[in-house]
Image (cartoon, rainbow, N blue to C red; front, side):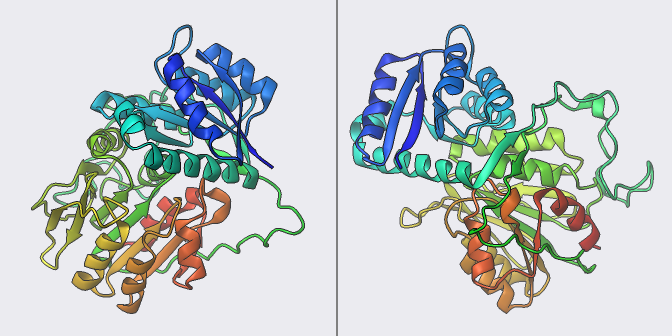
Length: 393
């Protein structure tokens, strides 16, 4: 059965080009188009598409507002088109918080210059998001309006004045930028011929880790936000984060996480020093490695590699530098990036956690870990932050 797509954009040229690209795939059917957010909501309700492509800037109602309404009234996977700018990154991250599933750069030059590459990328995204919709109920909770006046301290946070020397004090909620809570998708009941539900692992054993390394892709921005906001300011281990994301996005994403979290988050730079309570996000378009001295190395992105940044490269360097003192976590994402790096970590005695299928937007990267028998534990997304706090001493 063909995947039904609704194309939303106020530009007639872009609507036609996206529709033509999708129509070139016989397994995709464009069932409708819309020119603004209000029309998109009406069409989504009437046509019940499997996937919606969405622009941000539109008359009458912008794309983010439309996404929020669609997630409340007829939850559907949404692929946002975004400009490759700092502002475009901010808008895209807002859209993901509102419930959008994934994004693609809106680059007119690539559409005319590399039509085959654009076609492959867009159609692959559409098919992946359609599968995620069929696997889950996509029941999204409406985003919360604004942060409450007093936000409770994260699980495991030390009382005021009790943080160890050098730890970053928990920031008062009034100083943080209010942001909507990310949409939550509930898993659908499984059909009788589906694989049985995964048995989740028991709480972790406590250990002194020299590094926590987290890798993710599709669905990762919201997943990382939900994990990292649970960590206390005095989290005892350094953290490195690898999220598949364009170069223009990672700085804005790190800034966003830094405002929302008790720990400090920044885009990694060459020569940064790992320290407890600091999470370093690999810059888009480049590769991040760590060494035994606790120093971060940022290398140019190798065109031969599919992912820039690549989870395998960061995990592999951590395996070489820290032996059995790494706790690696693989979250939602398509593909298998992280599997070979996790294999190296496992051989050195480090721990590997995978996000469970039910809470993944795309059960690809974690599935690769589980199928390769590399997972020491499988946890639901909402439990990972708490278990990290319990595990690291």
